[in-house]
Image (tube, rainbow, N blue to C red):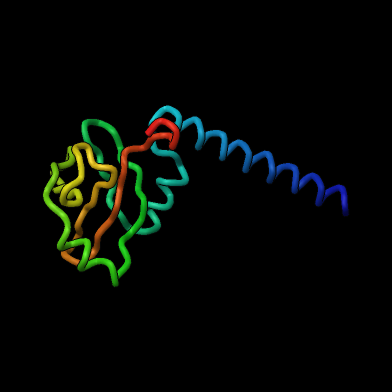
Length: 119
């Protein structure tokens, strides 16, 4: 019984290691990984592509912060599929965060996928 448990934990550990290594390789090549794609899919956010590069999903803006964010955004660009992209007023181009407004009350935040030490 203990041997089966040990083998199962070893298989799970190897799977998690391979998943994390593939995420790191995807991020190193400035592509969006599987975990980020799953996180975006679960939250219901759209996939945003600009100039052929998929943006990395960073989360949904909380309800209490939404009105402050909506008042401090300006139109920045459009995505490849025609979605309007917004940036915070006063931020440089390209902005560190890109916002997408969906249905006037849902705000999603994205960024270009890069390793932290390459930003």
